[in-house]
Length: 142
Ligand SMILES: [Zn+2]
Image (cartoon, rainbow, N blue to C red):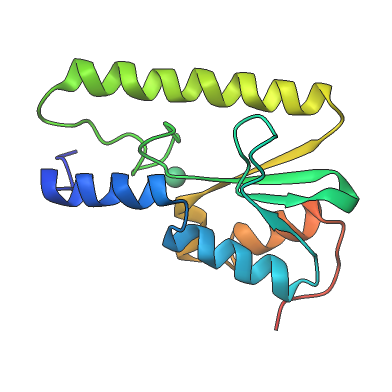
């Protein structure tokens, strides 16, 4: 599969990722809010600075970009045309770090949900059911 982003797009994407207010994140926040759960954002004291933290329920949610965090989907499997080895290592490091952070959180009694960016494209398919299960909620967001 060809690279789907120009370098300019990719660096724009990266700066959005760093800013921590990506579109996928906003979609997840809005759904969790509509499901009636209270959360805090980017709690710096927790491993990995989870995107959403539900302190009362001791649950955290990460919203991961498919490319940067190596999701096994069509977006995550994209191979950059240039600097392939650099990107491979970078993404591998992200994946290893994600794993360590999830383990640290679980050992500290937190439940962890990873939401993938591609789920936010059609939320009713994967995202909403995953959030309802994770949050132990039956009602639909409306
Ligand atoms: Zn994906």
